[in-house]
View (spheres, helix red, strand yellow):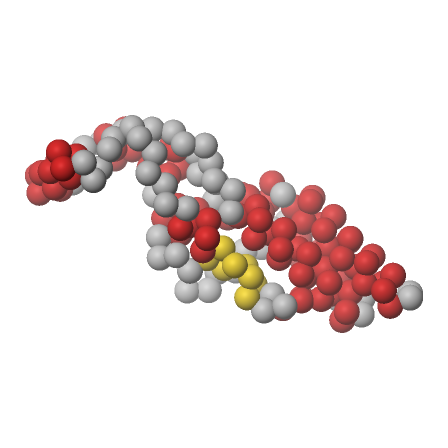
Length: 158
Protein backbone atom coordinates (compact mmCIF):
# COMPACT_ATOMS: atom_id res chain seq x y z
CA UNK A 1 0.00 0.00 0.00
CA UNK A 2 1.62 3.31 -1.06
CA UNK A 3 2.00 5.94 1.62
CA UNK A 4 2.09 9.66 0.95
CA UNK A 5 3.47 11.76 3.79
CA UNK A 6 3.28 15.54 3.61
CA UNK A 7 5.35 17.48 6.10
CA UNK A 8 4.92 21.21 6.64
CA UNK A 9 7.79 22.98 4.91
CA UNK A 10 8.84 20.05 2.74
CA UNK A 11 6.11 20.73 0.17
CA UNK A 12 7.62 24.20 -0.23
CA UNK A 13 11.05 22.59 -0.52
CA UNK A 14 9.84 20.44 -3.42
CA UNK A 15 8.44 23.48 -5.23
CA UNK A 16 11.73 25.33 -4.71
CA UNK A 17 13.66 22.40 -6.16
CA UNK A 18 11.51 22.50 -9.30
CA UNK A 19 13.20 25.79 -10.25
CA UNK A 20 16.62 24.12 -10.58
CA UNK A 21 18.04 21.99 -13.39
CA UNK A 22 17.18 18.27 -13.33
CA UNK A 23 20.77 17.41 -12.35
CA UNK A 24 20.46 19.54 -9.21
CA UNK A 25 17.07 18.00 -8.37
CA UNK A 26 18.55 14.53 -8.78
CA UNK A 27 21.55 15.28 -6.54
CA UNK A 28 19.25 16.74 -3.88
CA UNK A 29 16.91 13.73 -4.15
CA UNK A 30 19.80 11.30 -3.73
CA UNK A 31 21.20 13.12 -0.71
CA UNK A 32 17.79 13.41 0.97
CA UNK A 33 16.82 9.78 0.33
CA UNK A 34 20.20 8.46 1.55
CA UNK A 35 19.87 10.53 4.72
CA UNK A 36 16.28 9.37 5.21
CA UNK A 37 17.27 5.71 4.92
CA UNK A 38 19.93 6.26 7.59
CA UNK A 39 17.61 7.97 10.08
CA UNK A 40 14.90 5.38 9.59
CA UNK A 41 17.36 2.62 10.46
CA UNK A 42 17.86 3.99 13.98
CA UNK A 43 16.31 1.86 16.72
CA UNK A 44 14.95 3.18 19.99
CA UNK A 45 16.74 1.92 23.11
CA UNK A 46 15.40 -1.37 24.46
CA UNK A 47 12.65 -0.99 27.06
CA UNK A 48 10.71 -3.80 28.69
CA UNK A 49 6.98 -3.10 28.59
CA UNK A 50 4.73 -5.84 29.95
CA UNK A 51 1.96 -6.99 27.63
CA UNK A 52 -0.61 -6.22 30.30
CA UNK A 53 0.36 -2.53 30.50
CA UNK A 54 -0.12 -2.12 26.75
CA UNK A 55 -3.21 -4.25 26.17
CA UNK A 56 -4.79 -4.88 29.57
CA UNK A 57 -4.87 -8.66 29.53
CA UNK A 58 -4.70 -11.73 27.33
CA UNK A 59 -6.97 -11.77 24.32
CA UNK A 60 -7.86 -15.42 24.95
CA UNK A 61 -6.99 -18.36 27.19
CA UNK A 62 -5.50 -20.05 24.12
CA UNK A 63 -3.10 -17.12 23.67
CA UNK A 64 -2.09 -17.22 27.35
CA UNK A 65 -1.38 -20.97 27.20
CA UNK A 66 0.64 -20.55 24.00
CA UNK A 67 2.80 -17.76 25.47
CA UNK A 68 3.36 -19.63 28.74
CA UNK A 69 4.40 -22.75 26.82
CA UNK A 70 6.89 -20.71 24.74
CA UNK A 71 8.30 -19.13 27.91
CA UNK A 72 8.65 -22.60 29.46
CA UNK A 73 10.49 -23.96 26.40
CA UNK A 74 12.74 -20.86 26.29
CA UNK A 75 11.78 -19.41 22.89
CA UNK A 76 10.24 -16.36 24.60
CA UNK A 77 12.28 -14.62 27.30
CA UNK A 78 10.30 -11.83 28.99
CA UNK A 79 12.44 -8.82 29.86
CA UNK A 80 15.31 -9.86 27.58
CA UNK A 81 15.90 -8.09 24.28
CA UNK A 82 15.45 -10.30 21.23
CA UNK A 83 15.69 -7.87 18.35
CA UNK A 84 16.48 -9.36 14.96
CA UNK A 85 17.34 -6.03 13.22
CA UNK A 86 15.07 -7.08 10.33
CA UNK A 87 13.20 -3.77 10.45
CA UNK A 88 16.51 -1.88 10.20
CA UNK A 89 17.57 -3.91 7.18
CA UNK A 90 14.23 -3.40 5.47
CA UNK A 91 14.77 0.32 4.81
CA UNK A 92 15.97 0.95 1.27
CA UNK A 93 15.94 3.47 -1.52
CA UNK A 94 14.12 2.59 -4.71
CA UNK A 95 15.06 4.55 -7.81
CA UNK A 96 17.51 7.37 -8.21
CA UNK A 97 17.53 11.13 -8.02
CA UNK A 98 14.47 13.27 -7.53
CA UNK A 99 12.18 10.30 -8.21
CA UNK A 100 13.67 8.02 -5.55
CA UNK A 101 11.47 6.58 -2.82
CA UNK A 102 12.38 5.32 0.65
CA UNK A 103 10.48 2.17 1.55
CA UNK A 104 10.42 -0.64 4.08
CA UNK A 105 8.81 -3.83 2.84
CA UNK A 106 9.12 -5.74 6.13
CA UNK A 107 5.56 -7.01 6.70
CA UNK A 108 5.26 -5.71 10.26
CA UNK A 109 6.91 -2.31 9.72
CA UNK A 110 3.58 -0.46 9.92
CA UNK A 111 2.85 -1.94 13.35
CA UNK A 112 6.19 -0.65 14.67
CA UNK A 113 6.65 2.74 12.97
CA UNK A 114 3.47 3.33 10.97
CA UNK A 115 1.65 6.62 11.40
CA UNK A 116 -1.83 5.12 11.20
CA UNK A 117 -1.39 1.60 12.55
CA UNK A 118 1.40 1.68 15.14
CA UNK A 119 0.70 -0.93 17.83
CA UNK A 120 0.14 0.23 21.42
CA UNK A 121 3.09 -1.86 22.62
CA UNK A 122 5.52 -0.10 20.28
CA UNK A 123 4.11 3.30 21.17
CA UNK A 124 4.65 2.56 24.90
CA UNK A 125 8.20 1.36 24.20
CA UNK A 126 8.87 4.72 22.60
CA UNK A 127 9.08 3.91 18.90
CA UNK A 128 8.78 6.96 16.67
CA UNK A 129 6.45 7.02 13.68
CA UNK A 130 7.64 7.78 10.16
CA UNK A 131 5.78 11.10 10.04
CA UNK A 132 7.14 12.20 13.42
CA UNK A 133 10.71 11.23 12.51
CA UNK A 134 10.56 13.14 9.23
CA UNK A 135 8.98 16.16 10.89
CA UNK A 136 11.64 16.31 13.63
CA UNK A 137 14.40 16.01 11.02
CA UNK A 138 12.85 18.39 8.45
CA UNK A 139 15.55 21.01 9.02
CA UNK A 140 18.35 18.55 8.29
CA UNK A 141 16.45 17.18 5.29
CA UNK A 142 16.25 20.70 3.91
CA UNK A 143 19.99 21.22 4.53
CA UNK A 144 20.77 17.96 2.68
CA UNK A 145 18.65 19.09 -0.27
CA UNK A 146 20.40 22.47 -0.36
CA UNK A 147 23.81 20.79 -0.18
CA UNK A 148 22.83 18.52 -3.07
CA UNK A 149 21.70 21.49 -5.18
CA UNK A 150 24.87 23.42 -4.34
CA UNK A 151 27.08 20.46 -5.25
CA UNK A 152 25.28 19.88 -8.56
CA UNK A 153 25.38 23.57 -9.47
CA UNK A 154 29.12 23.64 -8.78
CA UNK A 155 29.64 20.54 -10.94
CA UNK A 156 27.60 22.19 -13.72
CA UNK A 157 29.68 25.36 -13.40
CA UNK A 158 26.67 27.52 -12.53
